[in-house]
Length: 292
Image (tube, rainbow, N blue to C red; front, side):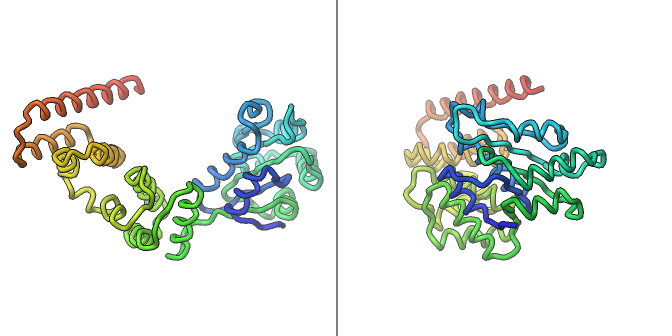
């Protein structure tokens, strides 16, 4: 078994030099899925329809899988086969001995022109085909966060992957608010990136403005930004409120309340904001109707 890390695998993807078989495991389901999906970047975009195939374990049988991995690339040096939820095809109860043997043979002697990615949750490591995968594949573990150090490494990896800049105090402040809760850390980091969009560096003040209850308590952030003539800040605050699930009616109420709470002499501006949020409210209602 050749053990690897998501960061190392991403370097291989960027270089275009990938191994024949990867087995992506671990408790971080989002990271597993995202890493598996990134393998498509090995193939030029216009050639992906012919050379990138995505399969789902629960909807795939061994014969279909073998057919996909044995197919040669078309007009490209490498073909990519991504098998999500691979436990569905690797450990089904009705796997015949012939199919099992064929899979084992491929794992032992894979095609040099094809990269196969098995992304899976829990696997029965007692099965022969799983033992062969663990022996011959590059095994990547996407584990969750167990310590504060893990959380810091996760943030730094995300910052590096997105080619951003975030100072050490900001990282510490973010971890202090989210703890080791990976779903919350991921969600708050996304909101932080939106808020700090266009800035050279994400700082501690950005974290304090976005993450935690302080954001929800600052009901007048948009109003204050408008009064100060900071349209960019107002739009960022608006995006954050929508991402937090705040409904347009509530935002409109905050704007109207803020208008009367401050010494505005701009009635037309208030009317424009009411009209603007009326349109947003109406468009969201139409989206909900279309979805239903």
